[in-house]
Image (tube, rainbow, N blue to C red; front, top):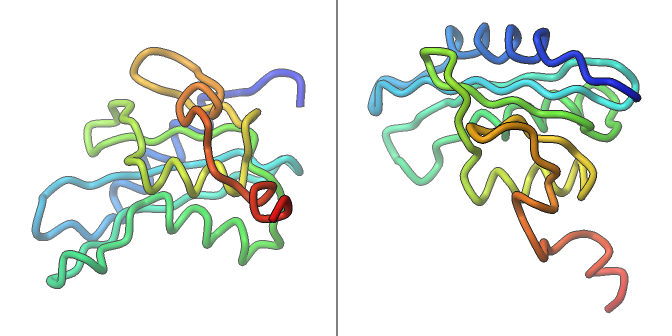
Length: 131
């Protein structure tokens, strides 16, 4: 994929914030990712009274990716309920790394960055293969 059309990703991420289940924090999050075959996958956060089992939006996006046949993420955009760009948490950066790798692009509050800039020295499948 030569050039990323970021606007559809932003639109899809914003739409997902309206589907978020965030009764405890009041902080809806939406995310959308472009897959190497051109599909857009998306997710929203789903909170839980047992806070530890809350699902981040990126969990939903990766589930959508895998359930839809897999592929590799090439670009990702995560937003809050106002549509403002936010950074995925550390756990979610690892999820994006697993399914997009070093070359996956992430829209950040400071602009577009590659995942190897966002998660330097990441642990991934290749580390297990070396074992």
